[in-house]
Length: 145
Image 1: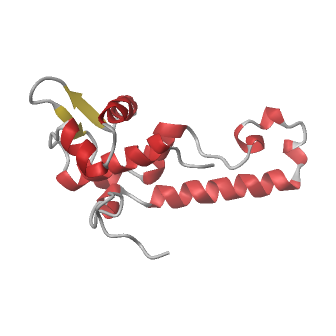
Image 2: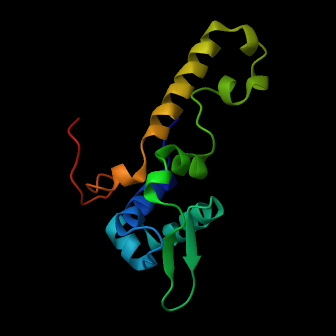
């Protein structure tokens, strides 16, 4: 599994909106600038986030995007899976029918457990936590590796 550019930009968008607060309308231009997201790409991402129930798109001169859920109720897992679908580390986990050995394969069980551990860890991170220090935004502080 590799996070796509759309997934990364969606995280930046939700992080910025979370920093502004629930229900606050922010212009597409401001989010694009602060998140270093191409405006046309942001529009596509916003459609997916809207369909996923995380944001509302407001049209018109004073339009923009606003969060529909509190930042503490939005997890990193939710945003990533809205953008790329359910996370799994191997085809045999995501599509067991693709491998006739899946039900009895010992490696399948390892992939399945690792996928669930990743999903669990991403589900623990919410945007109230992540947006506190701007860690998801290009101009925010960076974590040491």
